Amino acid sequence: MTLTVLYFAWLRERIGLPRESVETSAATVADLVEELRAREERYALAFSDLKAVRVALDQDLAEFDAPLAGVREVAFFPPMTGG
Image (cartoon, rainbow, N blue to C red; front, top):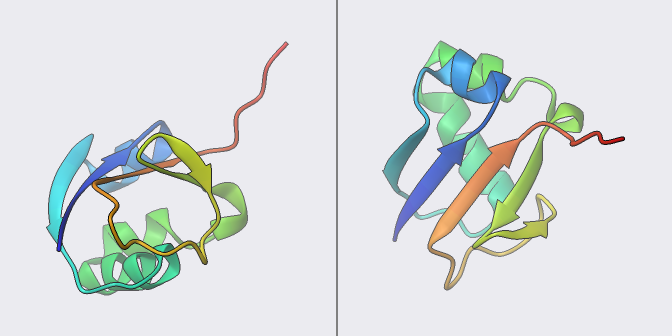
Protein backbone atom coordinates (compact mmCIF):
# COMPACT_ATOMS: atom_id res chain seq x y z
CA MET A 1 0.00 0.00 0.00
CA THR A 2 1.03 3.60 -0.47
CA LEU A 3 0.76 6.00 2.47
CA THR A 4 1.30 9.72 2.77
CA VAL A 5 3.61 10.17 5.76
CA LEU A 6 3.82 13.60 7.41
CA TYR A 7 6.56 14.75 9.78
CA PHE A 8 6.20 17.72 12.14
CA ALA A 9 8.51 19.84 14.32
CA TRP A 10 11.90 18.26 15.14
CA LEU A 11 10.97 15.04 13.29
CA ARG A 12 10.74 17.06 10.08
CA GLU A 13 14.07 18.71 10.88
CA ARG A 14 15.85 15.41 11.51
CA ILE A 15 14.39 13.64 8.49
CA GLY A 16 14.61 16.67 6.23
CA LEU A 17 11.14 16.30 4.71
CA PRO A 18 7.71 17.60 5.65
CA ARG A 19 5.96 14.72 3.86
CA GLU A 20 6.58 11.79 1.58
CA SER A 21 4.76 9.01 -0.17
CA VAL A 22 5.82 5.64 1.24
CA GLU A 23 5.22 2.24 -0.33
CA THR A 24 4.91 -0.24 2.54
CA SER A 25 3.74 -3.70 3.51
CA ALA A 26 3.62 -2.72 7.21
CA ALA A 27 0.63 -4.04 9.14
CA THR A 28 0.91 -1.61 12.06
CA VAL A 29 2.39 1.79 12.82
CA ALA A 30 5.22 0.06 14.70
CA ASP A 31 6.01 -2.00 11.60
CA LEU A 32 6.09 1.19 9.51
CA VAL A 33 8.46 2.83 11.99
CA GLU A 34 10.79 -0.16 11.75
CA GLU A 35 10.78 0.07 7.95
CA LEU A 36 11.54 3.79 8.13
CA ARG A 37 14.32 3.29 10.70
CA ALA A 38 15.99 0.78 8.40
CA ARG A 39 16.04 3.25 5.47
CA GLU A 40 18.72 5.68 6.61
CA GLU A 41 20.43 7.05 9.69
CA ARG A 42 18.28 10.19 9.68
CA TYR A 43 15.13 8.09 10.14
CA ALA A 44 16.79 5.98 12.82
CA LEU A 45 17.71 9.17 14.67
CA ALA A 46 14.23 10.67 14.33
CA PHE A 47 12.57 7.51 15.67
CA SER A 48 15.20 6.64 18.28
CA ASP A 49 12.90 7.46 21.23
CA LEU A 50 9.27 6.61 20.52
CA LYS A 51 8.24 7.93 23.94
CA ALA A 52 8.82 11.38 22.42
CA VAL A 53 6.69 10.71 19.30
CA ARG A 54 2.94 10.69 18.77
CA VAL A 55 1.08 9.40 15.73
CA ALA A 56 -2.18 10.17 13.98
CA LEU A 57 -3.84 8.00 11.36
CA ASP A 58 -6.05 9.95 8.96
CA GLN A 59 -5.97 12.81 11.49
CA ASP A 60 -7.08 10.68 14.48
CA LEU A 61 -4.65 10.05 17.33
CA ALA A 62 -3.50 6.45 17.45
CA GLU A 63 -1.10 4.09 19.19
CA PHE A 64 1.93 2.41 17.65
CA ASP A 65 0.15 -0.97 17.66
CA ALA A 66 -2.71 0.43 15.53
CA PRO A 67 -3.33 -1.36 12.22
CA LEU A 68 -2.66 0.47 8.96
CA ALA A 69 -5.34 -1.32 6.89
CA GLY A 70 -7.43 1.30 5.11
CA VAL A 71 -5.26 4.20 6.31
CA ARG A 72 -4.19 6.84 3.77
CA GLU A 73 -2.19 9.29 5.94
CA VAL A 74 0.18 8.79 8.86
CA ALA A 75 1.45 11.83 10.78
CA PHE A 76 4.31 11.77 13.27
CA PHE A 77 4.78 14.64 15.74
CA PRO A 78 6.09 15.40 19.24
CA PRO A 79 3.68 15.47 22.19
CA MET A 80 1.68 18.66 22.32
CA THR A 81 1.74 21.08 25.18
CA GLY A 82 -0.62 23.91 25.71
CA GLY A 83 -1.55 26.66 28.02
